[in-house]
Amino acid sequence: MTDHLDRLEAQSVYILREAYASFRSLCMLWSIGKDSTVMLWLARKAFYGHVPFPLVHIDTSYKIPEMIQYRDRLTAEWRLNMIVGQNREALAAKQTFPDGAIDRINCCRLLKTEALKNTLSGAWPRQRFNHDLGAYEPDPNPEPFTGVIAGVRADEEGSRSKERYFSPRTVRSQWNVGDQPPEFWNQFNTDFPPGTHVRIHPLLDWTELNVWEYIERERIPTVSLYYDQGEGQRYRSLGCGPCTLPVASDAQTVSEIIVELRSGRYANVAERSGRAQDKDDGGGLETLRREGYM
Ligand code: SF4
Image: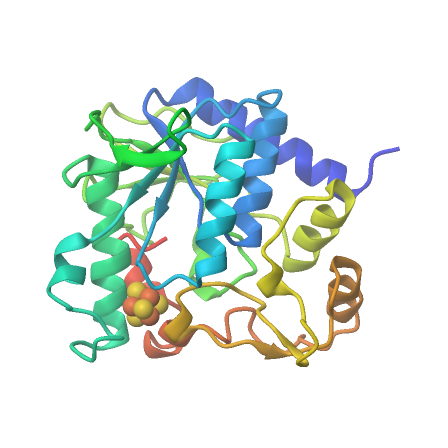
């Protein structure tokens, strides 16, 4: 008997396989958070344990340290083709919000959006994990990625509900929200003109609760920051340390998080309410996302 998680899994696996069959230069964004880690797990299922495209992580240098340790542990254990990009210039010049030089929106623009665009295009240096050395080294391959898989969920915040499974972007990763192709009855348009940049969203139909139910069912490893460590708080969404606040919660396990979500405790509290940059962008992140933000 199939249940709702089987149906979501089957659809996401189908989209991942379609993407792999349709785009020559494909990568998957991995933020280290629960959603993109579920997506990575689905990719391992879709391709029988071996993810056939690179994972890309944009490292702002302000991520909570445990997130980076977790990234590199799974990279080694799952033999991932891991690429890391960064806006080194802005960091070296201390042009960041934590340095007090600029506001949050412009800091996200520099450390995330610009870093992502230039990492995807190959214009800026990339670091690739060398499994023999167990360390990162410069990636000699500057080939641009034109198909980008991202763990966006429609229910997560306002602008994401306007996404498609296969969503074309301009060559500079910009998003024309008003001109998106229709997708009816699982008829995905994967036939884009050569050179079109496309974002692919296999998790669009998953909810926060579905993600946690699936993590429980599949026993997917997650960062401990999601769980209360005895202080009556936990992170519901992960990001940069200076801009991410925990929520009040005593959920210490995946099943306790599921009980908490089912109770409706957060029914009127946005999942990303602890992410300060959302508030600074009018609550919906649409300005940043139109420019190419994740
Ligand atoms: S979340 Fe905060 S520290 Fe991270 S890029 Fe945005 S403003 Fe800068």
